[in-house]
Structures are given as C-alpha cells and as structure tokens.
Length: 534
Image (tube, rainbow, N blue to C red; front, side, top):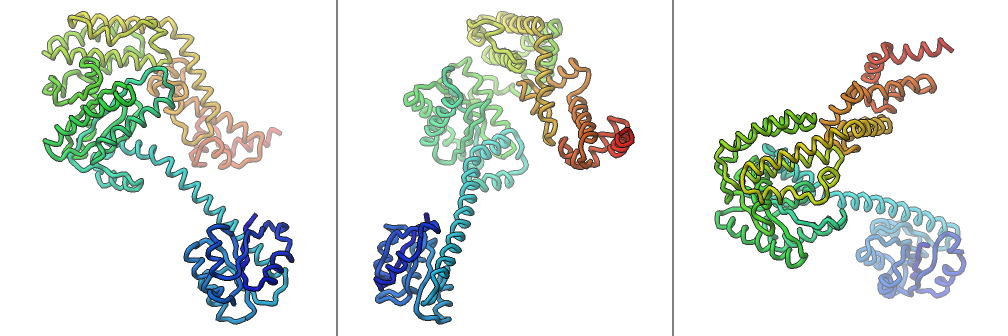
C-alpha cells in the first residue's frame, strides 16, 4: 500500500477525497490529514506519506510554499497540487518546485485516479532502480576486502615493482591508503587450535587484525594471506621508528595472548626504500617467521637479528631444492637419496650457523609435507598420529642426526606413495577427466582449475595425466569438445558459431580450425556429409 496524506483547509473537500474514491482498489491508503500547510509539515515525519494531495489556496502557508519547504526537508516526497484556479503561472511554479502534477478544480474523479496511479508507477520504478543500485553497491562493498587482499598480495609478490602509481591508483579506487615509503613488511602467524573450523579461524583473524589496528593505527596497512598469515605493511620513516615498531609488535603479542588466549609470532622483514624492495621484505619476513621453530612462539623475530643475514643470498641453491622436488614427485628413491647426499655435503662445507641448518632442514620437511598434501594425503595417514617432525629435528644434537631423520621421512613417504600409487593415480586422473567432461563448455577453463578440483599441483597433474592416459590434458579437452561438436552438428540445427560458443570457443574461426585439425574435415564439410548420408 502507498500512503497518502490530504492537506486542505475545507473539511468537506477532505471528506470528499477520503470517501469518494475506493483507495484500496488502487493500492492506496489515507494515512493522515491536515487543515493547512503548517500542520502538514508537522505531520509528515510522523505519518511518512508516499504521496501528498495538497490544495494551493490555504491560509498561512499556501500550497506552493508548503511544497517548497516539504521538498527541501524531504526531497523524495511526491506532491500533487489541487486548486480552483487554472493558471499557467501556478503550473509553471509547481513544475519548477518538482511537483508531480497540477490538477484544477473542478475535476473528474478519474482524472485524479489516473494521476495517482501514474505517480504510483513512477514511485515503484524509482524504488526498483534504487534497490538495484543499492544491491550493486552492497555487492561491491562486500567484495572490497577481497579486492584489497588481491592487490596487496600481488604487490608483495612483485607485480607492481615498477608501477607504484598504478598501485596507488588501484588502492585509491577502493579507498585504501598505502603507507608512505620507506616501509617494511611483517607477517603475523597465529597458533590457532585445530578444533576451530574455517569460520572460527576467520573470526579469530579478524580479532587479531582489530588488535593490530588498535596499536598500529598510524601508517599501517594489513591484509590476510591464507598461506602466510596476516601481512602488515608499515611506514618506517626513521631508524628510531623501527625500534618503536618492534616494541609495538611485542605489545601486540602480549595483548593478543591476554585477550584471545592465542600465541602469535611476528616475522619482520627489511626496510624498503623503493616499492621494488617490497617482495624482498616479504620474503625476509617469511624467513624470519620460520625461525619460530627454533626460537619459539610469542616473539617478534627480526630478520636483521638473524645470524645468517650476511650469507642469505646463496645459502641453498635453488637447483638442489628443485631437483629434490622433481625426483620426489617421480617417486625415485635412489635419486632422492643421491640428492640428499649432495645437500649434506653442501651444508657441511658451507660454514652455516647451527640455527640456519635447522631452518634448512625444516624447509625440506615443509617441502615434503606440501607434496604429500598435493598428492591427497595427510601426515597421519603416512606417519601415524604421534608424528612430530619439527620437534624431532630441534632436539637432535648433530647435523648428521638431523639429516638422517629428514632423509628417513622422505624415504618413508616415497615408499608409502609407491605402494598406493597405481590406484590413487588412476582415481585422480578419472576425477580430472570427470571435471573436464562437466566443464568443457567454459571458455576460461584452465589446467589450474582442473588441478584445484582434485587438489593437485597443475604441473604434477599434467605429468600424471599424460602418464596415465598417454595424452595431455589439452588434448583430452579438445577430444571431448570435438566429440560433442560432431554430436551437435549431426543432431541439431545449430550454426557453426553457435556450436563454437556452446563448446567454450569464443572465436568461431578458431573452432573451425580445431575441428578440421582433429576430424580431418571442416564443420561445413562434416554437415554436408551428414545430410548426404540421410
């Protein structure tokens, strides 16, 4: 129902308007009446009418003056003026004020009804438009945290190294303020108990961010990276401010521990003089954070304070780590053993501190468990519930003991995966094929999407798929699409470009090229051959 208020100094005319029209029939109800403009202005905030029927000629404030004041106070109010005079000047002033319509007495009842219904439809259309805009704005506002996280994650990963103005512009568009250079990157990692589900973890992280913002409210920006933790970008203009920042980090740790009962560790990177240094600072913060295995939690760990800072650039060659991961994925135990021997000799001759040797082996364990997760297993399935590898390496007394233990973990994992490889590999490939079969029509389908559906790393899924099927993922996708293309061209009256779109090809010419390459015949020739065989 749309609420209507009547304002007229003649009681008999108010009664006429109130009783001579079946308002309910047209989705209206009379919500209030007033005998003059002053009373009407007082009653509007109480009755909140959608439409006001007001006489122009009233004592005190006339209809035009009332309308001016009402529209000023309530811009969205809708007014129809009624008068005994049919003068152009009144109509001109009414339209200038923003009055919907101007009706002269005497008038036919239907004339008023038509005007009211027209106004009702106009109000409805405006409200629908406002609701649509409001919903779009709501969706945008809800997406801002995700947009912010993506922009800042890309920033710490080096996507904006030479695009500082572009970064500022993108953040400004979502009303996020970037701290001034120089700044540093830090990472907060909370030890959240296993019993918390995803929503519980997200809620705890929000509380941690609130605790951070209450202390580092000046020149600090935070976002959440699910793999690393809560990432902070803080402006550090002077050396003295760096010391203040460390003290504030320790205060954050105490507050979170006291208020939430959580242990947290803060890894602190290096100061960035340029935006291009941000990825380095992020990487150093990650390295500092890893030291919690050695130094314990509830600490602010500075990269600058670590003993190996002078040798960090080439301590552990990337090739060794890459080869280890590759042969682990191939489940080649002999090659993994050989690489571990090389790693042992390299570390032994490098003159590294004992602390950093622990960190290197902790990284090797992390690499092992990441691969295990990638393959679809958890540590309990392979090593049992009483498996605490990081605690084990910390209590080892010599490098040889640490090395032998980590090497043994890899051997046990490879042996387990070799025993379960055949059935598991085929299941993974079948699930990947099933996902392709159900999503081949997407023009944005990527190997990364397929891999995510089976919880595998894209590179390894490519290797496994080719090994199990003899063809690549791309070849299988093309096969599915081409078989469906033949079916559609044979059994439907769809045009070639329509079939292309249905199969995930945005370019009909490219689809035709793929069809001809796969079927040794063009789509048009195929259609012609089908018609001839009928």
